[in-house]
Amino acid sequence: MKYAKSLIGAVLGASVLLSSAVMAENHVITAAVTAFKPMVLKIAPGDTVSFENMNGHISNTVFTNKDQSKTEYIPTGAEGWTSGMGDNLTTKPLTVEGIYLYKCDPHWGAGMGGVIIVGTPTNLDDILATKPKGALKRLVKKAKKALK
Ligand SMILES: [Cu+2]
Image (cartoon, rainbow, N blue to C red; front, side):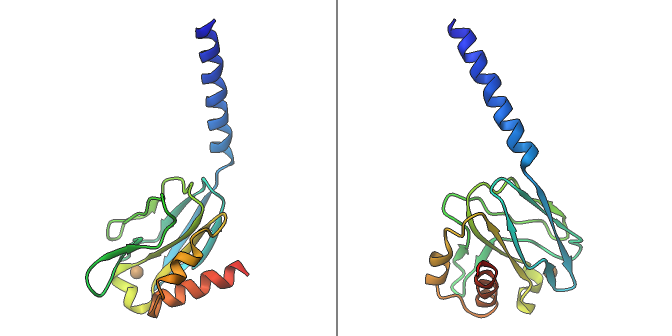
């Protein structure tokens, strides 16, 4: 009896996993010269994102500050990513809701970065509280505009 119950549980669990896997979508962001297109992408929790045409580019959620410390502008509990130079990358399912900022290291000076908004932008105030400057400020502005 106990065995039967756990078996039913396992089957139910597997079918829930399967249905969420079927519903999850993959979205494509294409690197073009010194821009990611689309620059702002809104997706549902559990979706994945593929970065394509990445020859000469990097997709990186780790930002280096002036004092060489590192900051990730992603929701608490989320996992960021850093692609290899020139590598196309597909993220793991982005399950934690919020705003994810990323940049291309070689072209960050030209403002090459992007915004992925997963579900509800839970960390918008946290990001604004860091008083972003320069290209980062521009990214946050785009995010806010997309949320209106
Ligand atoms: Cu680039």
